[in-house]
Length: 186
Ligand SMILES: CC(C)(COP(=O)(O)OP(=O)(O)OC[C@H]1O[C@@H](n2cnc3c(N)ncnc32)[C@H](O)[C@@H]1OP(=O)(O)O)[C@@H](O)C(=O)NCCC(=O)NCCS
Image 1: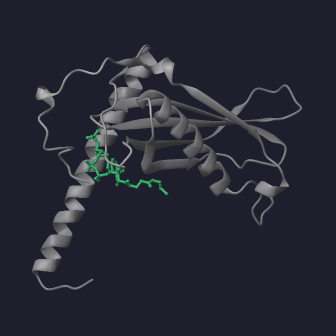
Image 2: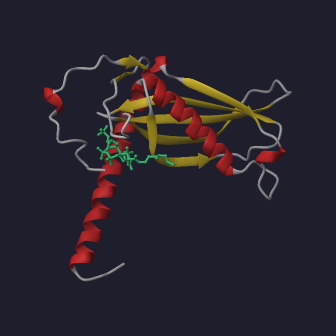
């Protein structure tokens, strides 16, 4: 990955029509069973992460109109344990779009499968998906069009995360280059 997404001058590229957030927003629901538990008897975090990746992937594919791969997953937060018999809802939407990548925001909610108490939030995550062509090369995505104040806030927050991701990668790369120049071999 480069900090500059491409050598192509974006100003020279034809516009792609935007797509509203609601066009690709998706919810994936799943009842947790004994197959999903860890050694403590609650649901394994990896089971939730797979559902998060699946839901985000569906959103990325719908928004970009084709294949998209997970480039990163960050800020995966588990707020409450999930139990066998919980009906888990994984809600995902495009928060932000770049040239070929998209940030997908995901919220995980859980409710007892046979009770009418409201669902509570048990986790959240942010994933970056990159749209790819048949050769696996990044391809352009339609700009997302936020529709509500909440969508606009999420878009602004996603830009802050994007800035920090790039800055962190650059800082670590520079440190490694400096250490290599000083003769460290790790
Ligand atoms: C994601 C992937 C296509 C990026 O390819 P690349 O040659 O590094 O492409 P670029 O550097 O041009 O990056 C393309 C876009 O992805 C973004 N991106 C790439 N790596 C990223 C990362 N680690 N975190 C966040 N964004 C990333 C870039 O910012 C860029 O976005 P933009 O065009 O909107 O500015 C490539 O690394 C890949 O195929 N990875 C494997 C994906 C996969 O298999 N996922 C499933 C895991 S099993």
